[in-house]
Length: 177
Image (cartoon, rainbow, N blue to C red; front, side, top):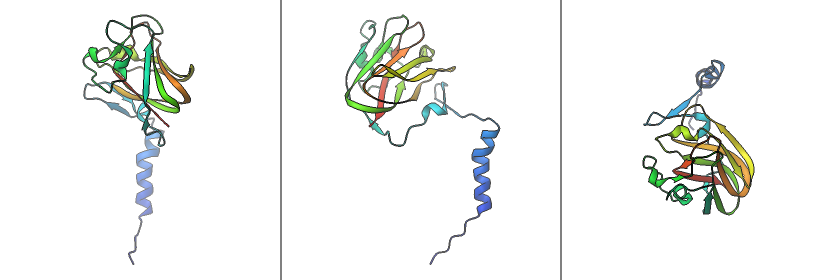
């Protein structure tokens, strides 16, 4: 028989140092990409039960700029440096991109691959499922890749840019069940 002794004092001290003290002192954690773009850690938390990437069967957007069609944001290509691999709308207010799911689903979160150059153009946007807002995003720092919670049921997922500019999405992945 193997006997295991647990040092409760060291375990409690570790929990205190790693969780309670940073919260009391108001520490925040953020991710920094290799390109220097920051993302609050809270944007990156993924729900435990939402690990299935949902199938997308179609898309549309408010106004396509040149050949930067909506399907470029759902073709599996995560390239963020070359805009020709991204979906781009015309420059205007409330520009949107919408994906059609293969079946009505519980949408838990979206992973958005933003364009690296001019990433700040996607700092203020809303997420909607079947026309109902599930997240209102207002960032102070641009992001490269981030997850945004949604927690809504439906068959159409829309990203609406709240800034007067183009909506540029290099890739959007929708997760849920």
